[in-house]
Image (cartoon, rainbow, N blue to C red; front, side):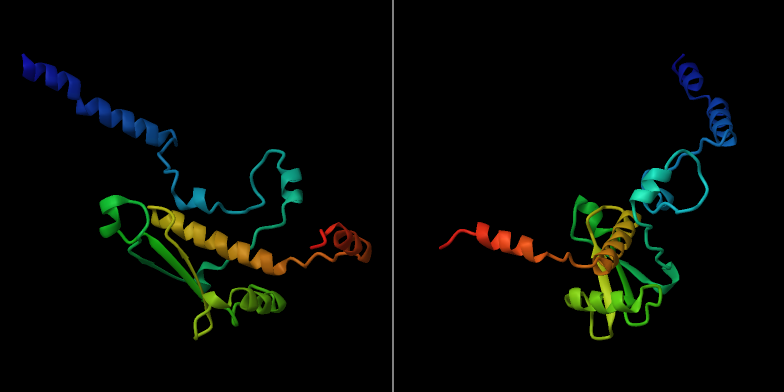
Length: 174
């Protein structure tokens, strides 16, 4: 009796049919940590009225992955016993002086701003061990590189003489 009940519950033919039907319908499982979700492609395709959002934000920097050296090692971050078994820490490095995908003036400013992240060989090193997942840490490293480039691209704000005088007048006299 128990064997019949177990066979009725298991029914491998029904499970296989359900999975193959789902895959045929195009509803396959995509992890939230897959690279296309963490580092989405920027293409002209797609739809919707995102034109106003694209105009408000400056275009993201295209980082050529073939010019980067990516390595993984064991992380000291969150993960419990997983930390001792899996290489999740991502380290991205590239030679800053020969990075022709970054303008020359921006490269020089990056070299002065981030001189503590440049080794003797002239490579800029970016690490991430914030996550338990390798691909997420890689995406975080790429985002850090984008932020470094945009910070170096920004021009300093010019303070007018009137504003400077007002700030001096507001300062408390010690």
